Amino acid sequence: MSNTKRTGQTALYERLSRDDEMQGESNSITNQKQLLESYAKRNGFVNIYHYTDDGVSGTTFDREGFQKMIKAVEENKVSTVIVKDMSRFGRDYLKVGFYTEILFKEKGVRFIAINNGIDSEKQAESDFTPFLNIMNEWYARDTSRKIQSIFRARMEEGKRVSPSVPYGYFRNPKNKQELLVDKESAKVVKRIYRLVIEGYGVTQIADILTKDKVLIPSAYAQIHYPENNHSSKKRGIEDPYFWTPTTVGYILEKREYMGHTVLGKTICLDYKTKKRRKAKEDELIIFKNTHEAIIDEETWNNARRLRKTVRRSPKYGKTSNPLTGLLICADCGGK
Figure 1 (cartoon, one colour):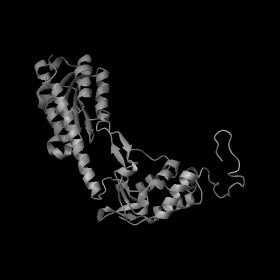
Figure 2 (tube, helix red, strand yellow; figure 1 turned 45 degrees about the vertical axis):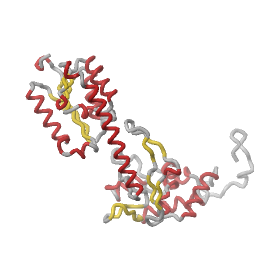
Figure 3 (cartoon, helix red, strand yellow; figure 1 turned 90 degrees about the vertical axis):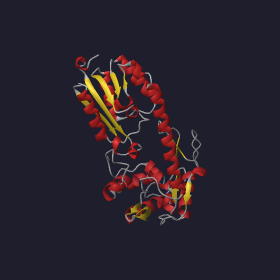
Figure 4 (tube, one colour; figure 1 turned 60 degrees about the vertical axis):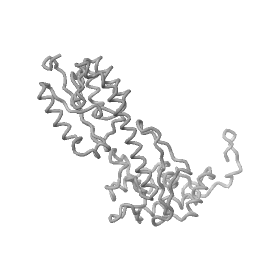
């Protein structure tokens, strides 16, 4: 089929992941765009549209640019898809095969991978495509293992690999591995632990902080340490003073407040889906006394114990009911 008879979009798809950046400038988005446009114009393709994903792994297909292109394909707006090579399209051979061998054929979309010499209109050239897809997936799996090994080695040396910083601390500008106490937010951390010791639950503490208009951790970081704030960059903060029980509970679980560095908190289960699980106690990598503590160990342990044993707490500003512990609920058995 000649290019002039194709009236739909010529979709040029570019993708770059963080792993690809190690391969040098040749894989950059700019270079991919130049290569694809040059090829398209040289071969008479018209109605050119760019679909781009920057910094996204090829093992996931939940990419904004990719999904926009697929939506256009499903709406019969695309006649040709061109990529630099098969690895730019994706690194999961089953999913790549579905799009290139099933969906594109059903929609009459021509698929071209320039560097691999693949053109779906030339059957002989496309016969090798499944093998390339398998090799690309193997590469992704191997790269994932290598990166995990590097991170693990760094963690075992006591080096922080996460860009996030616990609420109550900030990075030393002269030494990014060192945490320093932020006096203002540290006061809030101490207050939270003090309230737990006094018998308040996480929901009540969240209500107290919200009522007192204390900035939530992400809002505080956004104002004071925007370079270290990774939790709210992709989403806005609806109410900077609205504390949740989850946020309070998260603060009460962090060993970092005792001055310890805790690494390896989650374990990757699948390099494709990026699904992770919480690390077990014996899987954590803990280095003690690496920075100034905000909470002493006794207080931290007492707070943790009380969270597990105390079922109800006194209301803010009021004493407990004298009948507390004497009456038993007929439904749940709680006191």
